[in-house]
Length: 97
Image 1: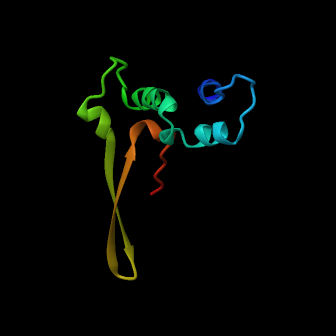
Image 2: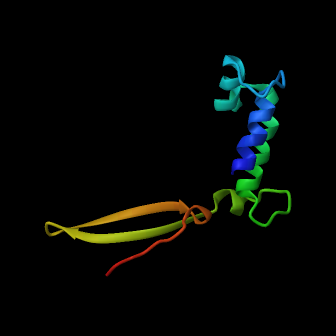
């Protein structure tokens, strides 16, 4: 992650002085608004979604979500909660019974 932020910093630093002026800082914070930052953002998205590292994002990789259901009782009424999350974003899931 630090390496990614460093490469993003250097890309935003258009004049190469290792400091970000107001415009460069805006490009660093909001790269989607600056054409010269788009490739960096697309590469990052590809890395995030391309789980098998084949250079392509399949529909299954794009969705990449698990669905689970939790039902519990609340004042004599059953409440069902549907939760969606990306598998790679879950570090640990503990369920206590």
